[in-house]
Length: 327
Image (cartoon, rainbow, N blue to C red; front, side, top):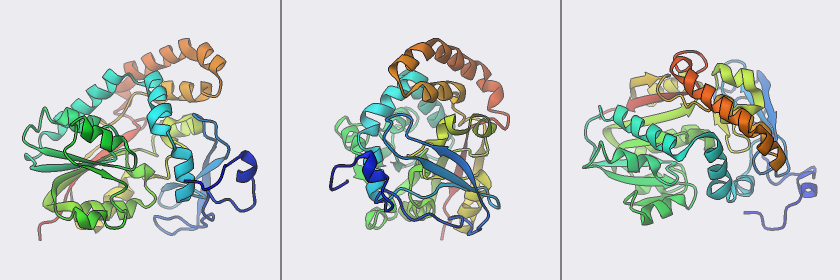
Protein backbone atom coordinates (compact mmCIF):
# COMPACT_ATOMS: atom_id res chain seq x y z
CA UNK A 1 0.00 0.00 0.00
CA UNK A 2 1.32 3.51 -0.78
CA UNK A 3 2.64 5.30 2.30
CA UNK A 4 1.62 8.77 1.09
CA UNK A 5 -1.13 10.25 -1.10
CA UNK A 6 -0.61 9.49 -4.79
CA UNK A 7 -1.47 11.98 -7.52
CA UNK A 8 -0.83 12.17 -11.27
CA UNK A 9 2.12 14.45 -10.45
CA UNK A 10 3.57 11.70 -8.24
CA UNK A 11 3.34 9.20 -11.06
CA UNK A 12 5.02 11.59 -13.46
CA UNK A 13 8.28 11.70 -11.50
CA UNK A 14 11.39 10.36 -13.16
CA UNK A 15 11.55 7.79 -10.36
CA UNK A 16 8.29 5.91 -10.22
CA UNK A 17 7.84 3.82 -7.05
CA UNK A 18 5.04 1.92 -8.77
CA UNK A 19 7.15 0.56 -11.65
CA UNK A 20 10.17 -1.69 -11.72
CA UNK A 21 13.04 -0.92 -14.12
CA UNK A 22 12.21 -1.76 -17.71
CA UNK A 23 13.44 -5.17 -18.88
CA UNK A 24 15.52 -5.46 -22.01
CA UNK A 25 14.94 -9.19 -22.42
CA UNK A 26 12.12 -11.73 -22.21
CA UNK A 27 11.45 -13.07 -18.68
CA UNK A 28 10.49 -16.44 -20.17
CA UNK A 29 13.30 -17.29 -22.63
CA UNK A 30 15.82 -14.47 -22.18
CA UNK A 31 15.67 -13.22 -25.77
CA UNK A 32 16.37 -9.53 -26.35
CA UNK A 33 14.13 -9.50 -29.45
CA UNK A 34 11.13 -7.61 -28.04
CA UNK A 35 8.33 -5.63 -29.63
CA UNK A 36 5.59 -3.49 -28.14
CA UNK A 37 2.27 -5.30 -28.27
CA UNK A 38 -0.10 -2.91 -26.47
CA UNK A 39 -0.01 0.50 -24.79
CA UNK A 40 -3.01 1.18 -22.55
CA UNK A 41 -4.19 3.13 -19.56
CA UNK A 42 -6.44 1.95 -16.74
CA UNK A 43 -9.75 1.75 -18.66
CA UNK A 44 -12.06 0.90 -15.76
CA UNK A 45 -10.99 3.18 -12.92
CA UNK A 46 -9.15 5.80 -14.99
CA UNK A 47 -6.29 6.11 -12.55
CA UNK A 48 -3.17 7.82 -13.93
CA UNK A 49 -0.51 5.91 -15.76
CA UNK A 50 0.16 4.20 -19.10
CA UNK A 51 1.14 0.54 -19.31
CA UNK A 52 3.01 -1.41 -21.93
CA UNK A 53 2.77 -5.06 -22.86
CA UNK A 54 5.89 -6.20 -24.70
CA UNK A 55 6.09 -9.46 -26.60
CA UNK A 56 9.06 -11.68 -27.28
CA UNK A 57 9.61 -12.21 -31.01
CA UNK A 58 11.18 -15.61 -30.32
CA UNK A 59 8.91 -17.42 -27.83
CA UNK A 60 5.78 -15.23 -28.04
CA UNK A 61 5.57 -14.54 -24.30
CA UNK A 62 3.85 -11.20 -23.56
CA UNK A 63 4.58 -9.32 -20.35
CA UNK A 64 4.01 -5.95 -18.72
CA UNK A 65 7.17 -3.90 -19.21
CA UNK A 66 8.02 -2.10 -16.99
CA UNK A 67 6.14 -4.22 -14.49
CA UNK A 68 4.23 -2.87 -11.51
CA UNK A 69 6.00 -3.13 -8.17
CA UNK A 70 4.22 -4.65 -5.16
CA UNK A 71 3.29 -1.10 -4.15
CA UNK A 72 1.94 -0.41 -7.63
CA UNK A 73 -0.11 -3.60 -7.64
CA UNK A 74 -1.62 -2.63 -4.29
CA UNK A 75 -2.52 0.83 -5.61
CA UNK A 76 -4.04 -0.25 -8.92
CA UNK A 77 -5.83 -3.29 -7.49
CA UNK A 78 -7.21 -1.54 -4.42
CA UNK A 79 -10.96 -2.21 -4.22
CA UNK A 80 -10.91 -3.34 -7.86
CA UNK A 81 -12.41 -6.77 -7.29
CA UNK A 82 -14.90 -5.56 -4.73
CA UNK A 83 -16.62 -3.00 -6.90
CA UNK A 84 -15.23 -2.19 -10.34
CA UNK A 85 -14.72 -5.71 -11.69
CA UNK A 86 -18.13 -6.88 -10.53
CA UNK A 87 -19.85 -3.85 -12.07
CA UNK A 88 -17.95 -4.34 -15.32
CA UNK A 89 -18.59 -8.09 -15.41
CA UNK A 90 -22.30 -7.45 -15.00
CA UNK A 91 -22.20 -5.39 -18.21
CA UNK A 92 -20.45 -8.13 -20.19
CA UNK A 93 -21.43 -11.46 -18.59
CA UNK A 94 -24.42 -12.13 -16.38
CA UNK A 95 -23.97 -13.86 -13.03
CA UNK A 96 -25.99 -16.75 -14.42
CA UNK A 97 -23.59 -17.09 -17.38
CA UNK A 98 -20.58 -17.17 -15.05
CA UNK A 99 -22.22 -19.89 -12.95
CA UNK A 100 -23.01 -21.92 -16.08
CA UNK A 101 -19.39 -21.67 -17.16
CA UNK A 102 -18.15 -22.84 -13.74
CA UNK A 103 -20.58 -25.74 -13.82
CA UNK A 104 -19.58 -26.74 -17.36
CA UNK A 105 -15.90 -26.67 -16.37
CA UNK A 106 -16.55 -28.80 -13.29
CA UNK A 107 -18.49 -31.29 -15.41
CA UNK A 108 -15.58 -31.58 -17.85
CA UNK A 109 -13.18 -32.19 -14.98
CA UNK A 110 -15.41 -34.81 -13.39
CA UNK A 111 -13.59 -37.34 -15.58
CA UNK A 112 -10.68 -37.00 -13.14
CA UNK A 113 -10.49 -39.48 -10.29
CA UNK A 114 -12.42 -38.45 -7.17
CA UNK A 115 -10.18 -36.13 -5.18
CA UNK A 116 -10.00 -36.05 -1.41
CA UNK A 117 -8.73 -32.46 -1.32
CA UNK A 118 -8.69 -29.65 -3.92
CA UNK A 119 -7.06 -26.21 -3.80
CA UNK A 120 -8.52 -23.55 -6.10
CA UNK A 121 -5.87 -20.84 -6.57
CA UNK A 122 -7.04 -17.33 -7.45
CA UNK A 123 -10.48 -18.45 -6.33
CA UNK A 124 -11.97 -15.00 -5.62
CA UNK A 125 -15.45 -15.57 -4.22
CA UNK A 126 -15.00 -19.34 -4.82
CA UNK A 127 -17.55 -19.59 -7.60
CA UNK A 128 -15.80 -22.62 -9.06
CA UNK A 129 -15.60 -24.67 -5.83
CA UNK A 130 -19.27 -23.92 -5.21
CA UNK A 131 -20.21 -25.29 -8.64
CA UNK A 132 -17.79 -28.21 -8.50
CA UNK A 133 -19.29 -29.67 -5.32
CA UNK A 134 -22.17 -31.00 -7.43
CA UNK A 135 -19.75 -33.25 -9.31
CA UNK A 136 -17.24 -33.84 -6.49
CA UNK A 137 -19.51 -34.31 -3.46
CA UNK A 138 -16.85 -36.02 -1.34
CA UNK A 139 -14.07 -33.54 -2.07
CA UNK A 140 -12.85 -30.93 0.40
CA UNK A 141 -12.33 -27.61 -1.39
CA UNK A 142 -9.92 -24.96 -0.10
CA UNK A 143 -9.27 -21.58 -1.67
CA UNK A 144 -6.31 -19.25 -2.08
CA UNK A 145 -6.52 -15.68 -3.35
CA UNK A 146 -4.51 -12.44 -3.06
CA UNK A 147 -7.65 -10.60 -1.91
CA UNK A 148 -9.97 -10.81 1.09
CA UNK A 149 -12.66 -12.34 -1.11
CA UNK A 150 -11.44 -15.81 -0.20
CA UNK A 151 -12.02 -15.15 3.49
CA UNK A 152 -15.58 -14.06 2.74
CA UNK A 153 -16.01 -17.26 0.71
CA UNK A 154 -14.95 -19.27 3.76
CA UNK A 155 -17.47 -17.44 5.95
CA UNK A 156 -20.15 -18.31 3.40
CA UNK A 157 -18.95 -21.97 3.41
CA UNK A 158 -17.98 -22.13 -0.26
CA UNK A 159 -14.49 -23.29 0.80
CA UNK A 160 -13.36 -25.05 3.96
CA UNK A 161 -10.01 -23.30 4.37
CA UNK A 162 -9.05 -19.84 3.11
CA UNK A 163 -5.45 -18.86 2.35
CA UNK A 164 -4.43 -15.30 1.46
CA UNK A 165 -1.70 -14.42 -1.05
CA UNK A 166 0.02 -16.31 -3.86
CA UNK A 167 1.28 -19.87 -3.78
CA UNK A 168 4.77 -18.49 -4.37
CA UNK A 169 4.47 -16.20 -1.32
CA UNK A 170 7.34 -17.28 0.97
CA UNK A 171 6.24 -20.01 3.34
CA UNK A 172 2.87 -20.74 1.71
CA UNK A 173 3.86 -23.77 -0.38
CA UNK A 174 5.94 -25.21 2.46
CA UNK A 175 2.97 -24.92 4.82
CA UNK A 176 0.66 -26.69 2.34
CA UNK A 177 3.21 -29.19 1.03
CA UNK A 178 1.67 -32.41 -0.30
CA UNK A 179 -1.87 -31.66 0.92
CA UNK A 180 -3.86 -31.71 -2.32
CA UNK A 181 -4.94 -34.17 -5.00
CA UNK A 182 -5.91 -31.34 -7.39
CA UNK A 183 -4.74 -27.75 -7.73
CA UNK A 184 -6.69 -25.53 -10.14
CA UNK A 185 -5.77 -22.09 -11.47
CA UNK A 186 -8.45 -20.44 -13.57
CA UNK A 187 -7.26 -17.14 -15.11
CA UNK A 188 -4.74 -16.79 -12.27
CA UNK A 189 -1.27 -17.06 -13.82
CA UNK A 190 -1.80 -13.84 -15.80
CA UNK A 191 -1.88 -11.90 -12.50
CA UNK A 192 1.20 -13.44 -10.88
CA UNK A 193 4.56 -11.65 -10.75
CA UNK A 194 6.41 -14.92 -11.49
CA UNK A 195 4.30 -17.62 -13.24
CA UNK A 196 7.12 -20.16 -13.13
CA UNK A 197 7.47 -19.79 -9.36
CA UNK A 198 3.70 -20.20 -9.01
CA UNK A 199 3.81 -23.44 -11.05
CA UNK A 200 6.65 -24.85 -8.96
CA UNK A 201 4.74 -23.97 -5.80
CA UNK A 202 1.62 -25.67 -7.18
CA UNK A 203 3.58 -28.88 -7.69
CA UNK A 204 4.91 -28.58 -4.14
CA UNK A 205 1.42 -28.61 -2.63
CA UNK A 206 0.27 -31.45 -4.91
CA UNK A 207 0.60 -35.05 -3.85
CA UNK A 208 2.52 -37.39 -6.19
CA UNK A 209 0.20 -38.31 -9.05
CA UNK A 210 -2.01 -35.30 -8.35
CA UNK A 211 -3.53 -33.15 -11.09
CA UNK A 212 -2.80 -29.52 -11.98
CA UNK A 213 -5.57 -27.75 -13.91
CA UNK A 214 -4.65 -24.48 -15.66
CA UNK A 215 -6.91 -22.18 -17.64
CA UNK A 216 -5.18 -19.21 -19.24
CA UNK A 217 -6.01 -16.41 -21.69
CA UNK A 218 -4.66 -17.22 -25.15
CA UNK A 219 -2.39 -14.37 -26.33
CA UNK A 220 -2.39 -15.89 -29.83
CA UNK A 221 -6.13 -15.40 -30.21
CA UNK A 222 -6.93 -13.59 -33.46
CA UNK A 223 -9.20 -11.33 -31.41
CA UNK A 224 -6.09 -10.00 -29.60
CA UNK A 225 -4.63 -8.72 -32.86
CA UNK A 226 -7.99 -7.47 -34.12
CA UNK A 227 -9.05 -5.56 -31.00
CA UNK A 228 -5.68 -4.44 -29.63
CA UNK A 229 -5.94 -2.58 -26.34
CA UNK A 230 -9.69 -3.16 -26.31
CA UNK A 231 -9.19 -6.94 -26.08
CA UNK A 232 -10.39 -7.73 -22.56
CA UNK A 233 -7.70 -10.32 -21.62
CA UNK A 234 -4.93 -7.80 -22.26
CA UNK A 235 -6.20 -6.61 -18.88
CA UNK A 236 -3.92 -3.68 -18.13
CA UNK A 237 -2.74 -2.95 -15.51
CA UNK A 238 -3.88 -6.19 -13.83
CA UNK A 239 -2.33 -8.76 -16.19
CA UNK A 240 1.43 -9.10 -15.88
CA UNK A 241 1.99 -12.12 -18.16
CA UNK A 242 0.27 -13.75 -21.15
CA UNK A 243 1.69 -17.16 -22.03
CA UNK A 244 1.18 -19.07 -25.29
CA UNK A 245 0.14 -22.68 -24.84
CA UNK A 246 3.41 -24.21 -26.19
CA UNK A 247 5.43 -22.26 -23.60
CA UNK A 248 3.33 -23.40 -20.68
CA UNK A 249 3.20 -26.97 -21.90
CA UNK A 250 6.99 -27.11 -22.31
CA UNK A 251 7.48 -25.66 -18.82
CA UNK A 252 5.25 -28.29 -17.23
CA UNK A 253 7.03 -31.08 -19.08
CA UNK A 254 10.38 -29.66 -17.91
CA UNK A 255 9.02 -29.89 -14.35
CA UNK A 256 8.34 -33.59 -14.87
CA UNK A 257 4.58 -33.42 -15.47
CA UNK A 258 2.65 -35.58 -17.91
CA UNK A 259 0.25 -33.52 -20.06
CA UNK A 260 -3.12 -35.30 -20.09
CA UNK A 261 -5.36 -32.71 -21.77
CA UNK A 262 -4.93 -29.55 -23.84
CA UNK A 263 -8.19 -27.87 -24.80
CA UNK A 264 -8.46 -24.69 -26.88
CA UNK A 265 -12.23 -24.94 -27.36
CA UNK A 266 -14.23 -25.30 -24.14
CA UNK A 267 -12.45 -22.53 -22.17
CA UNK A 268 -13.40 -19.83 -24.70
CA UNK A 269 -15.53 -17.12 -23.05
CA UNK A 270 -17.92 -15.26 -25.39
CA UNK A 271 -17.03 -11.71 -24.40
CA UNK A 272 -14.53 -10.41 -26.95
CA UNK A 273 -16.80 -8.03 -28.89
CA UNK A 274 -18.93 -7.00 -25.91
CA UNK A 275 -15.81 -6.56 -23.78
CA UNK A 276 -14.30 -4.24 -26.40
CA UNK A 277 -17.46 -2.11 -26.50
CA UNK A 278 -17.61 -1.99 -22.70
CA UNK A 279 -13.94 -1.00 -22.38
CA UNK A 280 -14.19 1.66 -25.06
CA UNK A 281 -17.27 3.20 -23.43
CA UNK A 282 -16.07 2.85 -19.82
CA UNK A 283 -14.51 6.31 -19.30
CA UNK A 284 -17.77 8.31 -19.20
CA UNK A 285 -21.32 7.63 -18.00
CA UNK A 286 -22.73 9.30 -21.14
CA UNK A 287 -20.67 7.01 -23.36
CA UNK A 288 -21.84 3.97 -21.42
CA UNK A 289 -25.45 5.03 -21.84
CA UNK A 290 -25.03 5.69 -25.58
CA UNK A 291 -23.20 2.37 -26.09
CA UNK A 292 -25.81 0.26 -24.28
CA UNK A 293 -27.67 -0.81 -27.48
CA UNK A 294 -24.37 -1.59 -29.21
CA UNK A 295 -23.26 -3.60 -26.17
CA UNK A 296 -26.42 -5.70 -26.41
CA UNK A 297 -25.76 -6.38 -30.11
CA UNK A 298 -22.10 -7.23 -29.46
CA UNK A 299 -23.03 -9.58 -26.62
CA UNK A 300 -25.59 -11.35 -28.83
CA UNK A 301 -22.95 -11.74 -31.56
CA UNK A 302 -20.43 -13.13 -29.07
CA UNK A 303 -22.88 -15.84 -27.99
CA UNK A 304 -24.21 -16.66 -31.45
CA UNK A 305 -20.70 -16.99 -32.86
CA UNK A 306 -19.22 -18.80 -29.84
CA UNK A 307 -19.83 -22.39 -31.07
CA UNK A 308 -17.88 -21.57 -34.24
CA UNK A 309 -15.31 -19.16 -32.79
CA UNK A 310 -14.14 -21.59 -30.11
CA UNK A 311 -12.95 -23.96 -32.86
CA UNK A 312 -10.94 -21.32 -34.71
CA UNK A 313 -7.82 -19.23 -34.03
CA UNK A 314 -10.19 -16.65 -32.46
CA UNK A 315 -10.64 -18.81 -29.34
CA UNK A 316 -9.54 -16.63 -26.42
CA UNK A 317 -8.39 -19.21 -23.85
CA UNK A 318 -6.96 -22.68 -23.35
CA UNK A 319 -6.89 -25.32 -20.64
CA UNK A 320 -4.15 -27.76 -19.63
CA UNK A 321 -4.56 -30.71 -17.29
CA UNK A 322 -1.24 -32.14 -16.14
CA UNK A 323 -0.32 -34.93 -13.73
CA UNK A 324 2.53 -34.62 -11.26
CA UNK A 325 5.07 -37.40 -11.50
CA UNK A 326 4.86 -40.28 -9.03
CA UNK A 327 8.22 -40.74 -7.38
